[in-house]
Image (cartoon, rainbow, N blue to C red):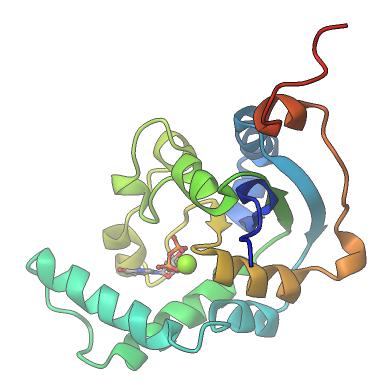
Length: 203
Ligand code: GDP
Ligand code: MG
């Protein structure tokens, strides 16, 4: 059985409430378009808290993994974590995420193209804006940190959600979009990016 062509990969993105308020919808779309990705679904909404909780827990291991990762990151910085129980840690993170993600309108999008998941994570930058690389969206447009968000007992404001793997993307796309809300179409640019022989340029 042959693998699907990399150009058919899809990923899921949310411009979070702070991104919408900061006027960054256009900038985010522009950066993903610039690299050659194709927008195949988009909608604006105010999310329900339950829908946000389901989104973050589509992966049944998310609570444990994120809790353990957070405890480790406290210890690496020489700080004492608020709890040694990963599930207690993620319960707080999840409550804060629900408040954050339902505070205003969000823009949900599905992007398609070669290695869409990894390319979008690269352009978006690392989760904590304080350490996101310069040149990424988070590195260039946000200054939040876990230190500040933990002090204020809120979620870190990092403007964007982007799926972490193709499997996560599949689950998230199904969670946020009906199949009829996604559009199958061809971009003329795709011939230049993907056609094996660059046929059709010369008369
Ligand atoms: P993402 O895929 O880049 O959004 O990152 P994750 O899936 O690992 O984490 C999801 C959310 O959990 C982040 O957007 C943060 O709000 C929160 N989070 C993850 N790691 C930490 C951490 O070490 N400390 C705190 N306070 N929150 C975290
Ligand atoms: Mg994630």
